[in-house]
Image 1 (cartoon, rainbow, N blue to C red):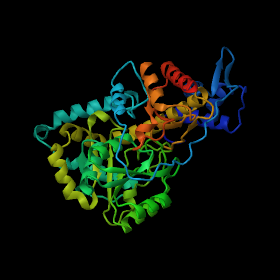
Image 2 (cartoon, rainbow, N blue to C red):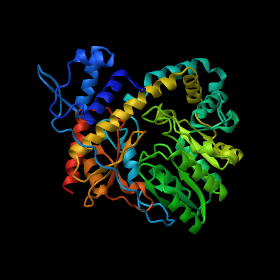
Image 3 (tube, helix red, strand yellow):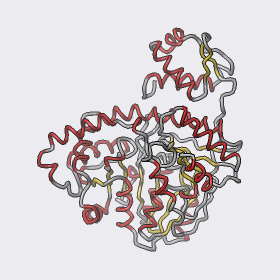
Image 4 (spheres, rainbow, N blue to C red):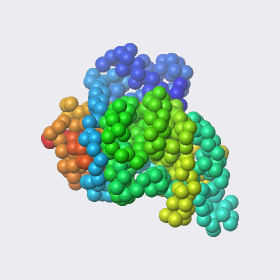
Amino acid sequence: MASGKLYEQVASRLAEQIDEGLYRPGDRLPGVRRLARQFGVSISTIVQAQGLLEDDGHLEARPRSGYYVRAQVWPRPEAPAISRPTVRPMPVTGQELVLRLVQAANEPDFIQLGAAVPAPDFLPTRAIQRALAAAARAGGRELATYQFPPGSPELRRQIARRMADAGCRLTPDEIIITSGCQDALILALRAVASPGDVVVIESPSFYGLLQAIDSLGMKALEIPTDPATGISLEALELALEKWPVRACVLTANFSNPLGCVMPVDKKQALVTLLARLDIPLIEDDIYGELGFAGDRPPALRAFDETGGVIYCASFSKSLSPGLRLGWMAPGRWREQIEYLKYVTSLAAPTLSQLAVADFLQHGGYDRHLRQVRGAYARQVAIMTRAVGKYFPDGARVTQPRGGFVLWVELPEKVDALSLCQQALEQRISIAPGPVFSASGKYRNFIRLNCAQPWNDALDRALMIVGRMAATG
């Protein structure tokens, strides 16, 4: 079976059998002992798997009778079409609401569907606590000093080893430790572009990137993007012919908010195109290790032969956002970015670097990834079905292959900004579509953070948002 907890694997296989019609609506599942024999697992594993399938709407329990396939298994909504932004450089606007959304992530009485921050339930909190404590005991003099750029030698060594899984042959000297991926993106933009320059981005695109572009006085050029395969190379090539583009910032693996993965041949063609035109490519690969199938798609950096790709990533989505640790492979801009990191913030946190280096070295990170990939996949599936159940007819939802966010297209009459404000009044945060566009497009779209434990409160929150969307 694939990676993940055993009961989650069993639940996934049973769900596939239901979707394939092996068990039809109204059918009773075989008894737990029979299922345990079929799957070669314990009875308790089957019971846990059935509980998951009841939570996500596949099954219903009938007292003293067993589990039955629901009479109405909520269908998966269709995916949105390829985006159609206005392909013209423009300043970034309309980002004021984002601060309120991220602040809601720290309010315990909120249902947090807005900011893409994993709930502590999905993070190895206790393991990180132990690693931090061990690093504090063993750190000695290192703890009393800055880890000046490029950062901790041991952490860079561990990251270089991991990058081989993404197809990147890097030495520790080619890596710079940063204070998260946002820090890395800003350093990369500062190194390759100046105020007033045009930067190509996907559309829709992560609002943190839009804010970085805005803060640096640059202009964003949005390119049509397919929710399954990523940015349109044809549209990109036409834009590069028409506009004086200084850099491209793209996410090829499990992008935010679409969750798309660019095919390997498309990645190769993209890197080749930009290298031929000598346009720097800044890669945001923060979700690259969070593929649901356990695979690790190659990074764009894997196809770089000229040093023209600046690779950026972090541990914020997989280990802990509070560690504030990211990294870069800056290509031919290494010396410049090393200096920019120093003059901007001196160094990334020393204790975090020591703790994560130890966590990676002893296999804790890989063990956690094997678990969390399956957990994120399950949460995305459950919330997708909840959208199909509670949201208005015609709602469309992306079908991500990794990460933990959903991009939802609502009927055209729905104003996502108004819906967001109504939800905040109900102590529910959602991310409205316009903040994912430099020009405020996607007024009838929202993004949902699925990295929240499924419970009655979350189910009720989605029902409330769906009802508000249905009333326009």
